[in-house]
Length: 215
Image (cartoon, rainbow, N blue to C red):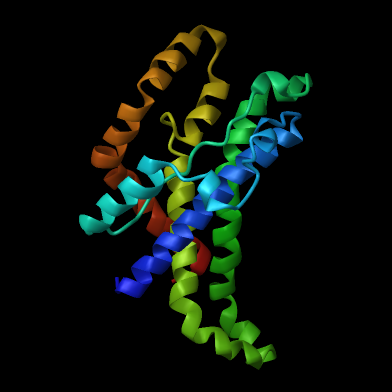
């Protein structure tokens, strides 16, 4: 990557993880919990969301190690499931719903920009003024890649990633002690996954990219 691309990549990563976390807060508010709103976390202001490890240290280490992909996270948006409305489906799936809202926001972003790239040529035939956007295609492509990475990364069913909350929602009550053990060591699990297991998951990024963008 060129230096300008790296800077843009980092900016896109920062904004995308912030949107991801705000989506969690909005989902929780929809279910009745206003914790994130009361703590001022339903905002796109980066200062409210920066996590020293996930937003600064990890991306910098990946850049310095010439990693082909950058991943990261923002400070988790707080929510209290005890504030959710006492509807049956919310009691059963509320945490999973809030967890999926984050990756879903990234899915929406990469679909919008990815399908735009895919169908740009037909659009150009009816809207020739769009040709002015062609020089920005590499930057649009970065938006697509960053959000695919975030969606795939966060859907891995290991704590503290969002996929684990969805997996835990499927756990019977008898397995809740296992959840508590896994969440107790979630930082070590996350670091182990990034350092040793991510390389086995990352090929999915290219698969999703080709499905959406078509090239």
